[in-house]
Length: 255
Image (cartoon, rainbow, N blue to C red; front, side, top):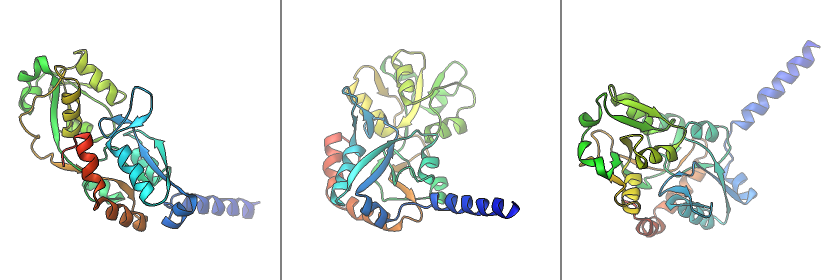
């Protein structure tokens, strides 16, 4: 009986170990499908359009990437709190759609070369933008800062906001709605996202900070498991081509 239990334990351990391994390039190629994880709540990189279809710069980018590799693409829904866990669990091969390179993430995962330059800004309703130009302007008890869990925006808020009221939401859509209906005063977000909403909802969203917040300059990239070196090499080779600049112009992404 003990021997049987021990064998079951060993078998389970082996299966768990296997599940933790990223699909090799050969396995991806044989499957015919590249799996890409996205949250779908980060315009203009990944979002659901009015028809309910996943759209955005990184959606178009990864479709072209897959085509260049002679693969079909499968988008896998994830969330910012779970994106690292889901990648580590091998639910998809690449995490995309607004993933910021950080040193903490880089200890666990591999990152592609830069997809887009970025940094944190203050986004507010245009009618209130003049009030919120600096971190000092927003970090006081009368200001309501809205943020969703799991990403670098929350990390920034948790680190720098000491006095303002923090409103925590379920996702990034709720953040934006809070600014629209003025139930919140500001949100800390990425320059890429702020620029998009300032362009597409004029008179509603304004970048109120005069520049990128100190110490936040960063870049977006594609995140993969560390043992997937061949896939990483192929992604970087493709990123060195023309598609990135062509699609960046189409989506008005700052390069």
